[in-house]
Image: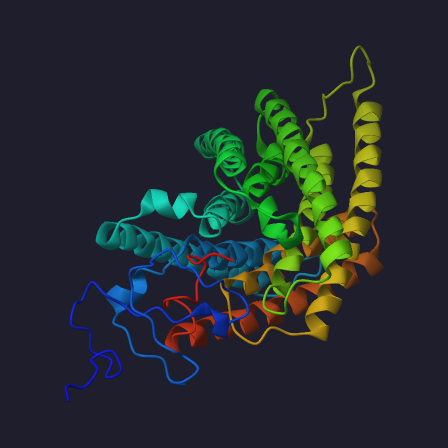
Amino acid sequence: MTPNPVLLGVYPDPSQELQPPSPSRSLHSAHSSHSDTPFIDTEKYQKPVSLNFRQRLRHFTWAWYTLTMSAGGLALLIANQPNQFQGCYQIGLAIYLINLVLFSLVCSLMASRFIIHGGFLSSLRHEREGLFFPTFWLSVATIITGLEKYFGDQPTKSFTTTLEVLFWIYCACTFSLAVLQYSFLFSSHTYRLQTMMPSWVLPAFPIMLSGTIASVIAHSQPERSAIAIVTAGMTFQGLGFCISFMMYAHYIGRLMESGLPCREHRPGMFICVGPPAFTALALVGMAQGLPDTFRVLNSTDSAADGRMVEILALAAGAFLWALSFWFFCIAAIAVIRAPPKAFHLGWWAMVFPNTGFTIATITLGNAFHSQAIRGVGSAMSICIVCMFLFVFVCHIRAVINQEIMYPGKDEDVSD
């Protein structure tokens, strides 16, 4: 009797790969984007069949950019620390540079996947994987912002011009993304409200971070550029937050009607923490980044006008911070009650949105000159660093143990 080559881990055709049935995992549905691949019962065989790197590369998805956006966010968090210590800047700079290496590596692997296996447009059209394409632009946002934080101490004219050009390119690309991706989703996919998850907000997230970038780079720009950048940042920040707020209505309705998501999806609930938090820090940062000559209408007192704008930004920032804190508590209680068992790239949602929440806390503490709030921000920063290290270690282990980058276990299968 001829032995089964699949059970021996040997494939008669290198183009074939196994596809475990997803009913054994609560996260995935029974359908995959690669329906022509053979199946194997993973409950019967505890150890998954080993695949070579080329076969696993097929399942290297857009969700991998959640790693680089989280690492970039961590670098920004360290740069914004209110209680600096010796070597803090160097640690943040090292993380920023490491993130550049990781970003280049992820881009190279994504390109290799599409060159070897094809399917670039299919990945963007996929009802689940396509929602993670915006994480690429979120990673770009952290890189642009990090340029100002770590290399903008003594900006030259060419440096400020480069940041200005990058900002406008980013705005154009992310606005196009928000329009085109939602237009495609509205016309090509049907999502049931009972299964609504915060990942539906992701296409609007990158354009919202235009305000965050503006809040960081505006203060170093010449007056003409600063006012234009702050105006665009305020506009697009409002657009992104309004889209997110409309999605929140469906999300709360889903929670009221269908209850909490399954345990494997619950880390994604932290995505809701991000929009109000990033909006709060962006409003305060942009108000403080306005040039001293800024005036409202025909006013002659630019100092009073600037102070008025800053007070309004602080009031709105505190209001939005509370909303972000509420979403954080809801998500934290849900995850603590039923922690996920299997690693997924969605775990990075426990890092990046909370990074924005922590930076918003520090920003408000600095604006209110409150040492207590700054201390809370420092304590939150320690928690974020610990969470980043925890998720990063789990990420590496999952790759080694074939828990991700494996048929049926990634974002390239339908929910």
